[in-house]
Amino acid sequence: PIWLTDEEFHLMKQHALFGYQILKEKNEFNDKILLGVLQHHEKLNGRGYPMGVGSEKIHLYARIISVADIYDALVTERPYKKGFSQRDAVEMIMAMTDELDIEVMKSFLGSIILYPVDSIVTLSNGEKAKVVENNPSYVLRPTVVGIRTGKIYKLAEDVECANILIQ
Image (cartoon, rainbow, N blue to C red; front, side):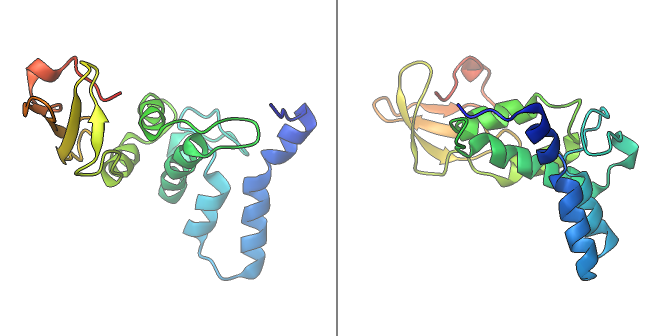
């Protein structure tokens, strides 16, 4: 794997500030967009960068860009890491409730489709199934039909399916 030195990592963390300055000089973008660029690595808990500001000072556009940027960083293969599966990336984002705006997170997750209708998945009980309906409120838990058995699994609603996951 390729690792950055402390100096390189510090410089990399300045990209939000550099991007902000470049766009500001162009004089073509409003303050909301500029704040989105500048603050997209800030975290609600104040542990982000480049300024380390907390929740009340992070613009909504930055909160939106942050979730999309994290998702992209997780699923994209880099020279220093393999990309995570979309499912794993969603799980990781869902665990970042102290860092990310929950309403923005819900909106983002409701807009992505991890398991398109008609895709074939393998369930944790070993059965192969076909996705027949997505549930925007629970992107990891669509309704599927077992290919061999014809059994309908409403993964988001049926208590009997609570322990069945898509692998």
